[in-house]
Amino acid sequence: MALTTLSFETPDALTDAFAHDLVSILKTGIKTRGRASLVVSGGRTPLALFKQLSETDLEWDKVDITLADERWVEEGHEASNTSLVKNNLIQKKAAAARFIELKSDVDDANEGVNAAESNLASMSQPFDALILGMGEDGHTASLFPCSEQVLDGLDMSSGRTCIAVQPTTAPHQRISLTLPALLNSRNIFLHLTGEKKKQVLLDAIENATEAQKPITAVVNRAPVTLMWAP
Image (cartoon, rainbow, N blue to C red; front, side, top):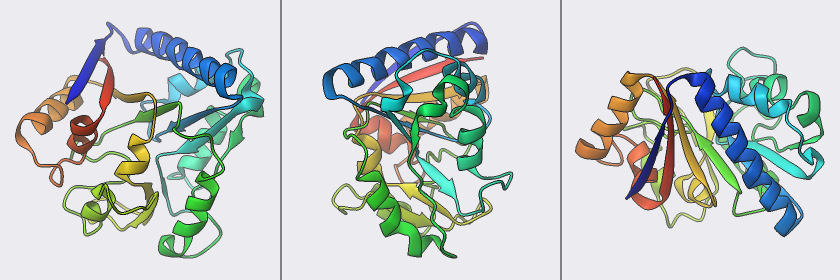
């Protein structure tokens, strides 16, 4: 386990530092490989980061962006991560970035897994940067503790990039990157704010199995940088 914690006095200070680091990583990817790839999570925590990135100078036409997970809802729905990213990150200067969809126009996430995997295969990999969040139950992406699909999602030998998930503790069917797909990243960040989330993470690392708190599966297997502010 290799968890590096970077603590900031305020969320604004975290956002400034995080945006600077991400732009540097993406610039390196563009310079060395011609394109760069960024995987992001939904929720309210990254909104300020997304907006700052959208106003930052970068060769955005050489950047691919996708999601760590998506709820199986129509674009425009309040729960859509696709809408959140398009409305907050892929705007202004970042509007030239290429967005890789996880959701396709089928009724069931199980039917959309192959299409999502095909879309992701077009991205530069390993991903240059992955930004994960974490729920208060220890889930990350849509790998929910003790769900029927969590062991499939954590299986390092499955050969799958995506799985369909039907959480029992949250609304909406989802599609999620699997643990091996998430770990296929050069730089992995965990973006958290608030004392409660930090304590959940520390408790998970010290006391929980990977199935009980899936965030531990990421921290156990790869270097992770925790970006945290109160």
